[in-house]
Image (cartoon, rainbow, N blue to C red; front, side):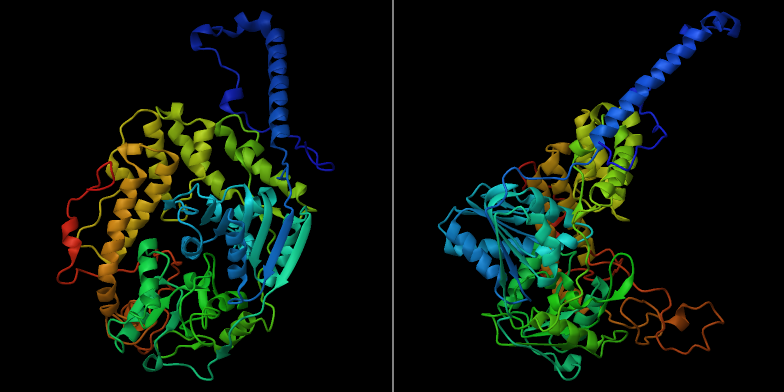
Length: 633
């Protein structure tokens, strides 16, 4: 019901097609106005009766959409908060509790973290008792102990370890943490987090019978280097941090000149298998230096003695801004991991044209990582996202208005709660993109539940990827309607002799296909194994090409005159200026076209990495190969 003090709008929402009165065909309508005269009063009464019926239907819809905050039937008996800075043993102690219990779930934001926990627990517990479930990979998912990403976590069990719990404040994925904490029916919960997130998390488990707070201290020293480090001074076991694909390659190219073949790269657009291989090569000493984005800061453990920041600004999807101290702390804390290396050091890397990291910001991050001062973790309230049953929608066409209504009413319902409604704009846009497809032969396949599953597919909808989502959604609808779907529409071929970027894009398309096929099996006659095969082939090709891709990268040189410039430009300002307007500026590498704002997803448009393949490369064997339905070509 509407919240008291917030009456319903006086206006009636637009009618949905399901509730619209049928207009008689032309042959059934009276031909002339005079013929209608005796029945005008009856028509008016019929119109009023139809309007009353419409208002009743709308009122029913409104009442069905009134938000009810999610609750659990059985509250946890015990909740343990493990609070502290990086490298303080929080996750280790929680995993030991899970191993001792022998039944439960470890949930984390990244597949890599789930893999690490799986490896740790599988080494301690009997074979077959530990499983892995990340969406992309399933190993004994029904095992007594399961390591998974948060979105894959079951809603009930014996013990839940929720790692990196401060992700509850994440604007894009925080709703998954909030839903799990509010509705998860576990006998015991261990919440691993930075101390600053405790005020956000505590209200979500306030129904627990017993709550304990364990404060952890960092287990190893973390010192700040007294002076910047130049490329010639970078030592083995060093992580160098940058914040876009282009910058990662530019920095790696500078370092590779001093340590040929001993520098690796790690960023979000790499397939998971490639990322694991790169991390393993660094851990075993095959690579001396790893140039990485902030993906390394999300709890990934590597034997790094030093972390150097090549830049301290990042594009966060909205603006280019300096790192917050808690972000710098998450990254800086990767240095000096207890049990892997001695004490750690953190500093800045200079000598790469166009990059000017702020040493003071890095020092502040190190202080937070040591636990010497609190961080500036944003005080975002946990977000609540609606389930389909919360919306009161009858048909797919109702969803846009139902979502908007839910958000408005949820704001009122959560006004005095420790949460806030999620922004449903993205869901509305997806529904509106699908509705035109449902007016034709695909309409029969576009029932409410199918459309809701499509709009919630975990496929990026930000430009330019939204076209990919719409293509896959259309393919699913065509399959459901019994219409043919070309396999290449869903799962592109493995590139032949392509660049690293080409293989990254093909691997991303294969992961999207896996996401679709898990929800809609059999589209285009494909299975998840087929898509996994394509991703594996792309990951193998990328692993082969990465050393050459690093070596031939051109870091920070104007393509026209060779002047040193920032990595995200191809030409300096004078060379980019209209003829006759650049001579007075001098060749000084100005910011001519705007900074590359591609996030850590490989969407920055960089080209030229990994052109061709090394002698003896196996990439040529991939020509014309398409997976069979069994997943192997």
